[in-house]
Image: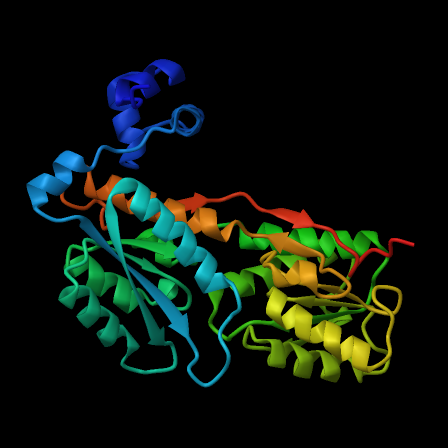
Length: 348
């Protein structure tokens, strides 16, 4: 079977060939419904950019740097980074790009300079940044000066004015968790946030408060603690929340690792979950299904996000200019869904 061409995509979408090119290169002046038709046709046909000629012309595969942020003084997130990397690696292999990964200490004041040096040394054509580097505006501007295309995973509103950002609607996801718990009758809440300055995680909290406000509940019914996305911080924060009188009837966590820690805190206090306290996570990582009880959480398609980041960078590199990321910033929203499990709803 012949590999689909851009003309096949145009025919299936019912648009001109040039329209497909504009969509793939993220150019302006394309209506949302037309863009959706083209992307749907791309997905249905399995169309991908032909990189063979491009790589021969450049005498090497396109190089993409993936920058993982890590706190070297604590355990890493159990799944977030590995899922993004898996998706990006598979897309790179499929599309003929070389992925180069680096782990950088997010607490190092010289982290931005280290990233720039690594990107220069590796001669990267594009880079994928994870939080909090995805919201480092000085770093984004410096990369633009190097003519390096950038995709920011879960970048905030300011980042999307400079570079391509890719992620779920964090505000809506937080709202969905809040609406779910309010609908179950909860009125006293604990919330375990992520790292300070983590823009996407703060968006989850803002959306949660909005859901409460729509139900006529004040922010005063929420007691929050600051975690760092680790199991240990979830345990410590949940123990502090559960020691309050009255204690919250539901604890919302900004990721699944912290929610797993909160589950342990509830078990240690001999509390029934969810009858005495409901607990929710975020990300729908593998740990969310193997803890007891399994976690209600938000499914964030991390592998798809990693793959899409690579696809966007290759589209940008294949545009009319060398890179278009610096002149065509914007946000691409990936769909999410709430996954309801036993940690918030009693099955019997």
